[in-house]
Length: 428
Image (cartoon, rainbow, N blue to C red; front, side, top):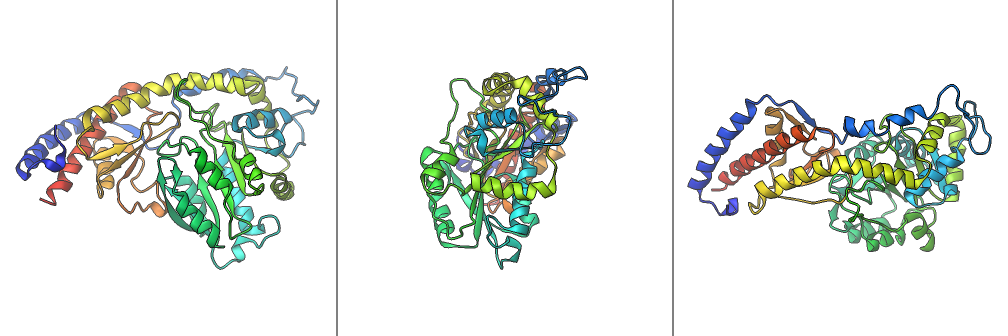
């Protein structure tokens, strides 16, 4: 079929009638599907069930140094756990502090420390007249929620196929001392699945911030979340790149096993410079006596090392890959050539990003919900939930069954077609 924009008004009216009939038929199916978050499916969670048998009341609960993991001690995490997470991110274990189950919690704490106590002796952000954060868009809604909760002004930075618009990033970071940070998901970004190019990573490392306490918040959430064995995106290691550029303290890197083992019971870490580590630990000694060492020990004994994690993630990919391909194939088959939307085919991560015609995203999401499929709210991928073009929709294929996902994808493309026709008729 030719592009919708080339259809006459009469053709659009006829098409609208046909699509409305199909939509009513879809509503009559009584679907009840939730694709609003990137949650692992039960099949994925089952992969980690043997981890629960690694430790029991008869187990030796000492780490490699002989520490009794049932007791107090080791503020920054077990040596083996630091090595395991360092292997995921490609950094030295000396640069790692191990936390609890969620890297999101570490990010919140890191912003909170900067607000209340400052970074490396600099003025606490709460005492400044203005604090700004750069936000690549579309991006991760929970990042934006953190900075919004502290009253930090968020500035949109457009994403390109190689990462954030670095000309804009450099202009703002290098000239505005109120710019204190930027959110980044450098590998298989949320929601587009874009991986930053080598040049983009090195331009980040070579920033010349107007604010000495500017920090890159490098959320490497999907560092091992590949969908294909033969198409795996890789990026330069940011800590070493910053050190080579003379900016060793400029980055906070985060990762976790949330979508590797159990989302609610994983382990996470921050990786950063020696100076930043010392600064963070000064506050940690007041905040906590340490995180769950038994869970750290459980993860270490189950995965053993980075090769164990990679082998485990290949099992995840076997489950996820058909789901991603089912959605992408439906988009290609049903919407290809109609010029009413664009999408990215990622090599990993947890999401598919769809760009609808301008002014259509909210209506598409609403139509899907009315027919029984709940999706991430339109606008969620932008700060303040304000997508200026009302076009981006995040698709989360992981949680539904393959059968349910096929039904949801069919409904989604139907809603895209119907809303797009309605939008085009407004201009005829």
